[in-house]
Length: 108
Image (cartoon, rainbow, N blue to C red; front, side, top):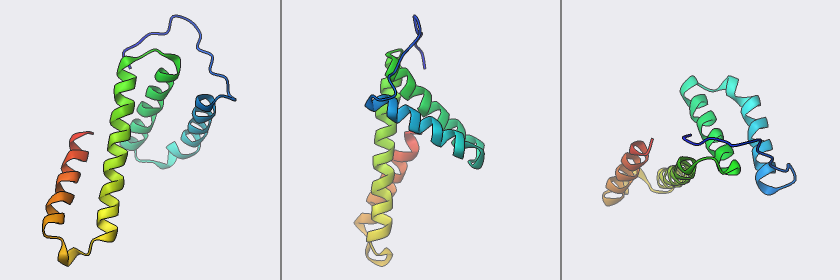
């Protein structure tokens, strides 16, 4: 993540970020064995970025967090287009869908 902690990092479990971290760790523990290795690596990388943000240890973690949010939004837009636009009437929308896909792939 590019940063270093200068001492222990305490994140209260009752805080919003503490609750989010606890839930994320529980979900990762339960689901990582079921994921393909490359997806599991991505989950752990993002979890480490969230932890670095919570501890104030990484400027890079802040950038990764913004990129993850952007990638999630692009994926959501891609799914919406695929679900709501009929394939036979795409035309211009097909180009937009391909552009969204290319941007999402480039962000990985």
